[in-house]
Image (cartoon, rainbow, N blue to C red; front, side, top):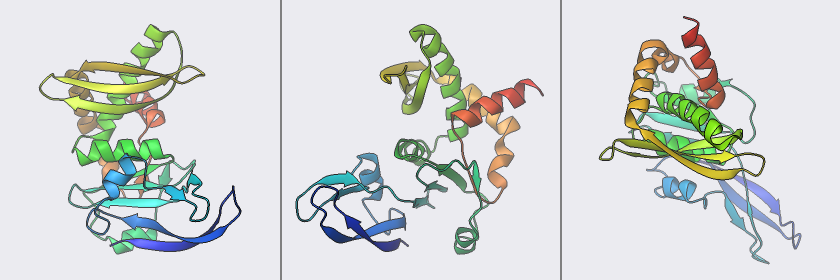
Length: 219
């Protein structure tokens, strides 16, 4: 099912007010094009009905895919690392085997959907990304501002990430052997699999990967 709310939006260009229906919770069945619209950046796009000015209306979205057993809760700019939502837990009582993730920006939302919809493990992907990022920083001699999963090619036996390097966030694509992801997956299964048995939504990102490596090395 989907959840929608009405919001009055004032156009920053012509100051016209209009009522907008915002989708706050949805899946592929309730909103058939939601995956495509999120991934192609059209989901949050709003156009003023009077002057056609366009902007992004960023708002919380619970993206749920019960077929692929994952839910992603997008809360713009959230600093939380964990979120327990009693309403969601009551609405979906059988969530013990579902990956529940919390993200703070649209790029993270798109990445989580791309990874989990393909039935890859996002913890393993973050660990692999973290390892590759260290190589990129040495090669580029600059700090990485952010980085995201790009694609996995089983035939070529590779996984690729796109990083944004330095203060100017220059795009940098790095491909590595699939073995890096597979080794990370073994690490997750051995040391971090129990994280998905708890209620609530968790942040699995570069900060988590850094801490996970620290915990692993200290064991």
